[in-house]
Image (cartoon, rainbow, N blue to C red):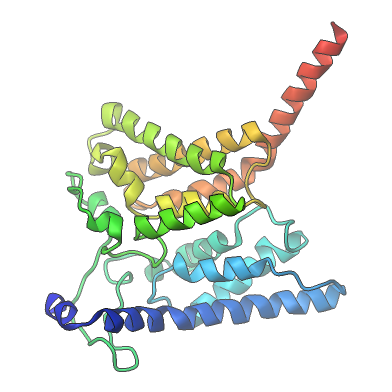
Length: 307
């Protein structure tokens, strides 16, 4: 039934159906997040910062399009207050606000972000689409976590014609975004590249010596294309506020994120997507990484002076 509906739909039917599914969540994200930021700015007698404009746009891209609006509102409020404003506001937070929103939904309302039916909207929106009963649409990672054989590579994994959150499915679109970030100098190529290097290295290690499961046997290029690995490496790990800032630290930070993401996928089949937890964990260690790099340089210079 679903295949027939897709064949009958035009490009614009598909575009508007997806757009109208995401638009309410984008509006809720901005309304709740900006309202809190404006309120705090007025209370502290500070200028209103534009930092949340980026986080507010990314949040709808990393959650299921079926997420209830009231749950999204609670998650956004929690992340803005406890992951950002409580630490001083824009530029002072050490955890990625968008990822904290997703993490809050994952731990507080796990049924909203896990399972086979949450990643595809199966009901009509403003007259577009059609109600489909009994439809399942597990992500490729979710399927691999429950089987013993890694899924065969499919170009749909690159184009984005697979179930998943809006931002993570199309490798092509993410690559274009990466080029834009690098061209404008917003993102560090060292951080971005090191995440991919760490992920590929860890995937090859598990291919050779890993446990006997589909995740460990999955080729490195499938690990890169599936789930939120590419999106996380390009748009989340490179957040200039929460990532490492020293040049050597960027390499260490990125490598550890990539390695940790693949390790979580392989070792924890109950949660096949490890990018969120890997980035949040390394957000916590980014200041320590920078401190160690700086101290190493200080000690080297001190030794030169003493000689």
